[in-house]
Image (cartoon, rainbow, N blue to C red):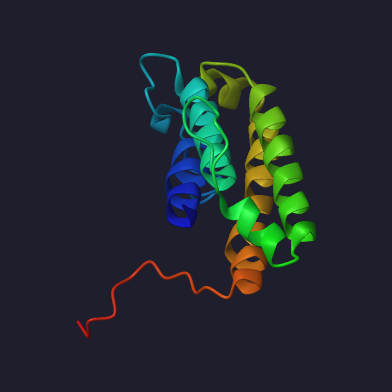
Length: 146
C-alpha cells in the first residue's frame, strides 16, 4: 500500500506532472491518460481505493477488517483519526481540481502543488506513525544479498 501510494499515486499521478518530483519542471504531458482527459478522475479513484484498503472495505463498501481496526485494537485511535482526517482532506483537495489535470497544471499549478502537499502528509502517517505503532517494518527491496 505504501509503495503504491507513494510511487504511483502521489508521484506518478500528481508529483511528476506538476513538477514537484521532476526537478521543479512541470510536465503536464506526463499526466496519466493524458489524451483522454480523465487523469484527475483516475487519481481520485485511486485515492478512494487506498481509503477502502485502509478501512478494509470491499468495492461495495461492505465493512471488513482493515488497518484502522488494527490501530484501534492496539489503542492507537489517535493515529487512525489522523489518517482518516488526512485521507478526507486529500480527497477534498483532489476533488477541488478539475480535469483534465494537465490543463489544471498549466492554468493553476499552485493548486495542484497544494493537492500534492496534502498527499505528502499521508506519507508520514502511512510510513512512520502507523508502522511504528503496529510494530511493522516497511521495505521495498529484497534482502537476498544481490
